[in-house]
Length: 108
Image (tube, rainbow, N blue to C red; front, top):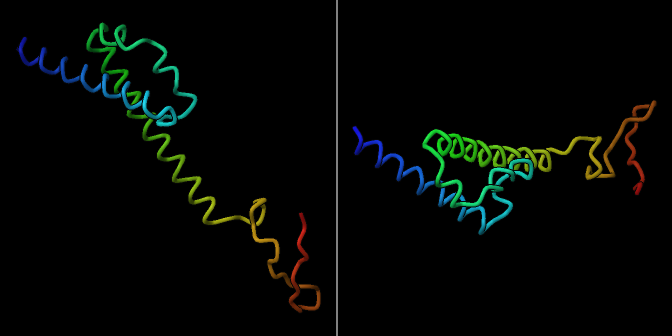
């Protein structure tokens, strides 16, 4: 039982250490509002108990997923531009009152 706990604790420490290394190599790995995860120095973080390390690891995983979701939403929004978007194609065809088609002039 004690050996299992020690192995699990060491594995968790290695994951936290890797998270710090990943964050130091790419500061944009997690969203800006989650940067406070890394305010505590690594040595202090590794000296915490297993519950604190598990909370850190779970929050870090959620932060990675949140950034991935945000990137996917941005890509989808860019691909499927709405008419209200400032990036929408400026020459959309519209119907006039008589039903004839015309192109809107460019407006910048």
